[in-house]
Length: 103
Image 1 (cartoon, one colour):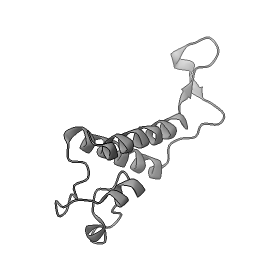
Image 2 (cartoon, rainbow, N blue to C red):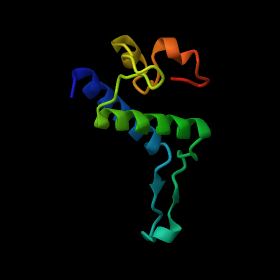
Image 3 (cartoon, helix red, strand yellow):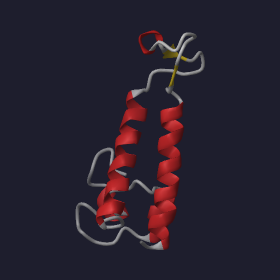
Image 4 (cartoon, rainbow, N blue to C red):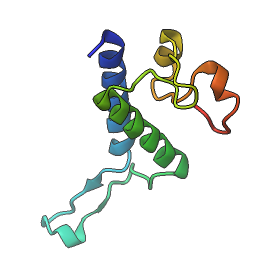
């Protein structure tokens, strides 16, 4: 695994954990799983957070399968600066303009 893949994996895992912590359930007194609820600070996950989690999971999958850093549209290299800026990016800078909501 390359240094950029290691750095990206670590950053993506941290972001995933932060998003998941925002809505982690907290057990109420008595420990009954049926009575568990959300902590006062937790909020339901937004559609935007769901999309971000999906992009993070997809990027982690690409790292594991060895295709991280390859544009999904043209098959060319993504470029280190792009991957450092947006580690979950799926398209190179040139192809990102051809895909709505492209990262």
